Each structure stands twice: as C-alpha cells, then as structure tokens.
Length: 296
Image (tube, rainbow, N blue to C red; front, side, top):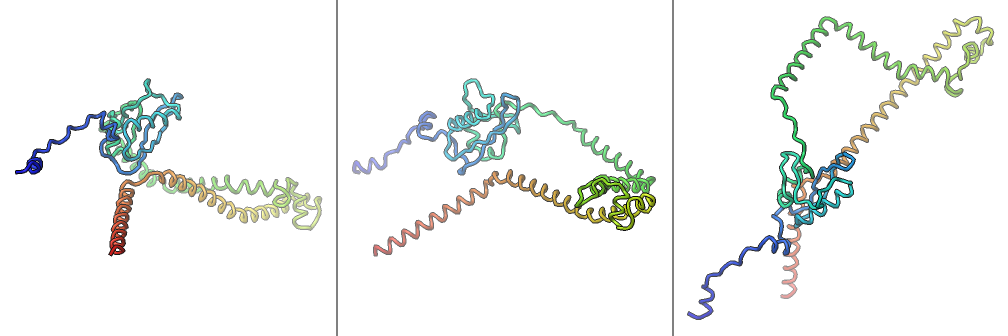
C-alpha cells in the first residue's frame, strides 16, 4: 500500500466549530431567517408620553448588532425613551410579554406578523369568564322589551318615527331653502322684501297698495311660489348630499387601501423569488447549450 492510499484512508478529523466571535467576524452571527426583506414593527413611548410605532426594514443576512443600531437610530428620530447605554439586544413581544433577543427575532419567520415593544407592555386585564353571560342576558332583555313595545305601541312608534324623519328633513332641507327664497339675492330670492312688493312683481297686477289691501290672497300666491321653489331645489340638495357621501366613502376606501399596500405577503414574495431563480437557471442552461453548439 502506497503512502498516498494510506493518506486517502486516513480518518478525516472535522475542523473545530467556530466560536461566536469568529462567526460574527465571518458574518455568520445569525440563525437562518427569512430570505426576503421584511418590516419589523416596534412600539415605543416618546418623551411627551405618546405612543409611536417605528418601522424598521430587515434585510437577509442582517446581524443582531446591525439591527440594534438601526432600531436605536430610528427611535432617536421619534424622540423616544432609549435605554441608558443606547444599546438594544432584544425586544418585548406585545402578544405574550416575553423578552426576545434580536437574534431570535431575526431567525423567526413569525416576527413579521408580530408587534414588539421597547419597554415591557402593561399586563392586560383578565376578562371575567361570566362576562359573555351578562352580554347575552342584556341582549335577551333588550329583545324582549323591544318586542313588547312593538306589540303594544307599534302604531304610535311608527307615527312618531315617521314624524321625526319628516321633521329632520324639514330642518335640514326645507327651512334653509325657504329662507333662501325669502331672503336670498335677487337671482334666487326676494332680498327680504315685504309681501305686497313681492306680489306686485310676481303677478304684474296691481301695485303695493292693492296687495296690501288683499294681503291674504298675496300670502297664498307667495306660498304657492315658495312651495314650487322648494320642490325644485329639494332633488338638487339630495343629489349634492349623496355626492358628498360618495366622495367621503371613496376617500376612506383610498386611505384604507394605502395603509394596506405596504403590507407585503410573505408567501407571494417567496413565490416570486422562486420563479425568478427558476428563470435564471433556465437562462443559464440555454446559454451553456448555445456555447457548446458554437464550439462544435
């Protein structure tokens, strides 16, 4: 047996494991974590006592030391209460009030969906186990009371509610329109003129003195004109009201959509990276085949 064969059959001793300091020097001071950038949410308390949420972007192969420096710098811009040494080695989870090291946060895929806190969250008050019994009992009592009231006083309640709705619509639409017709500018109303003058301009029959002597007939003519003006303006007011409500709802939906846009789906991002890697492998194989064909 030659010396080379003896060396090949020799037992290979694996190298000793790296110490944490050596791992950190080689950029291996973290556990395997998500392979895509994600957002870490950290709740903090400012010096004024208000609560704020700091959002820090975490990228792959990020060490716990770099993450701690990023959190400190982000918190300083919010004027937050920082630790005495200005170093962060871990955060509290608001869901379970457990202190997690930054290395554990980086290695856990669930950290993206959690909310962390710089300080220990206040313990949540324990809810009474019998609270749902009280809520159910309150709903039952309310339902029985409402059924009895509708059975005995249904007609009275209906007349009162319908009259209340009519009164509300009159206060919101009819009264302002009538005031506009009576005291509005010349293009719309009568500029707060007296009834005899208004009737003399409406009918072109008789002067102010004539309509002053026939004031009841003048009031009837003015009332008919005013009612016609109200009937014309009422649909316009309804259209304007619905337009304002539509714009408000659309603005709220847009704001809600903008708040949800920043939340990336981890599964979608991983699928995109897998598809991108597959395209890269196919492209490389095609390039190799083309290069081999050119050599032949």
